[in-house]
Image (tube, rainbow, N blue to C red; front, side, top):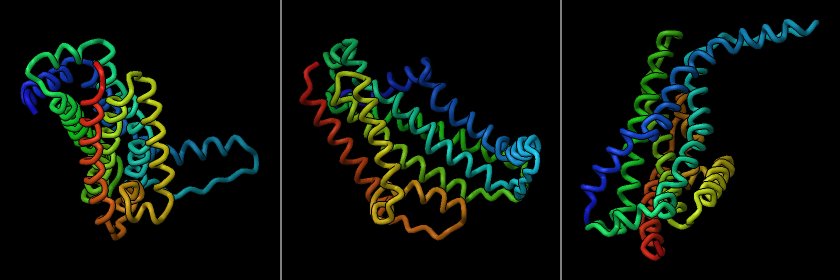
Length: 254
C-alpha cells in the first residue's frame, strides 16, 4: 500500500475541485428537498387530473411524513444508484485510457494503493452526500409534516449506504477489468438490475446483501428487521470485491 496517504489526499482534493463534488451530493440533496414536496402535492395533483375526467372520483388519504420518506427511498434506490454506476464506470478505466494511471504509478505508488484509494475516496464522498441528503429530507419533511420520526430514516439511510458501497466496489472492479468506460457502465447496470431482481426473491433477500433493499422499506414502516445475513454478506462482498479489483488491476497492462 505504498503511497496510499498521499494519493488519497490528491483524490480528495480532486473531488473538491471538480464536477465530482456536485453530482452525487447534488442529487442526494435535491431528492432530499423535493421528495417531501412531491409527497405533499401528489394527492392534489391526482385529484385535479381526475376532475378533468367526467364521472371519475379519486379518494386518496392525506399525505404523511412516511410518504415523503418512502419517496426519498425510491429515488435513492433508482436514480442515485444508477448515477453511482455511471460516475464510477470511469474511475480507473478513464485514467488508463488517458495515460494518467501510468504517470502516477511511476511514482512511489503501488497498484493496490491506487485501487484502494479510488474506493476510499468514493466512499468518503458517498458518506458525506448521504448525510447531507438525509438531513435535507428530514429538515424539509419536518417543516411540511408532523409526526416525523428520525430513527427509522437514519436506519434506512445506513442500509442504503451499505448497499450503495457494494455498487461502488463493483464499479471499481468493472472499471479495473475493462479498458472501455462504456463496457464498465454496461456491466455495472447489469449488476444493478440483477440486484434489483434478486431482492424480490425471498431466499436471496433473507440470506444475501440484496436483502438490504427491502429492509430499507421495512425500516421505514417500523417492522422488525433481520439483518444478520444481509449485513454480513454485504461486508464480505465489499471485502471480496476490493481484493478482486486489486488483483485484476495488478494483471492489467497499462
